[in-house]
Figure 1 (cartoon, rainbow, N blue to C red):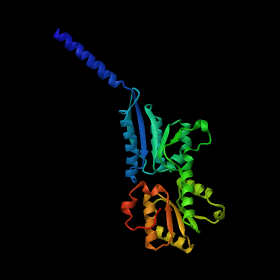
Figure 2 (figure 1 turned 30 degrees about the vertical axis):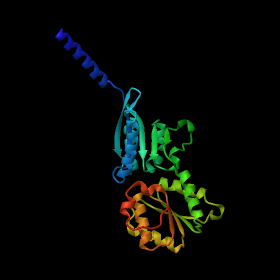
Figure 3 (figure 1 turned 90 degrees about the vertical axis):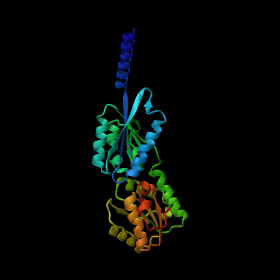
Figure 4 (figure 1 turned 120 degrees about the vertical axis):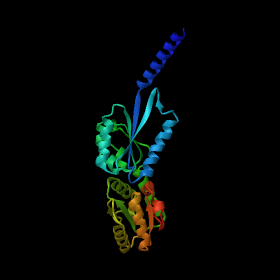
Length: 269
């Protein structure tokens, strides 16, 4: 009798183990810049993990697992990660974050590959504006530049700015903001607002040269579109050369350690 019970118990245990082994798994790929903007990448990661933790990391009877990837701000590396997801039969959703350029550049690849893409933090307007509404697999989980641009313009107008200048990073994200802000300009500013472009990786001397040039143009308000690293250098340059203009910044500067790194302060709104 005892042997029979042991055999039955062992049989049940093997069935349970086998069931767990055969359990269906779905994977969420989290692809962000964990090298230069780890805090932002970690925020995206924790947001999704906290949300799924509330449902015990399950969708129905299926288990959810997370794959964290680091594209390092490199669009080609991000494409490699997208392809990794595409080739994974257990992949459920691809999450892109912080930087807009990878998602803008490979928007067509994501849609043509029917990759369910979630965007919690990357504000480039073109990301979710695919020409075909029937072939759109990218979904935004936050506001985009089409909303931000008009708000920045309104702030500058309300501050009675007369000579507005756009200072933007030279990426698809920066260009998206340029279009959005120019589209929101009042009639009297059409054709008078200029743009200055900068690349990722500028140094403090480059930043000071740009700010000095804005001073010579008698700019009184700057609308800044920048990530944290370049934004810090530009704002410090404003202080270094004693520039007397207001800076209205896109939230891109919050994507890193802007406030802890930028010891010198200027007026930022």
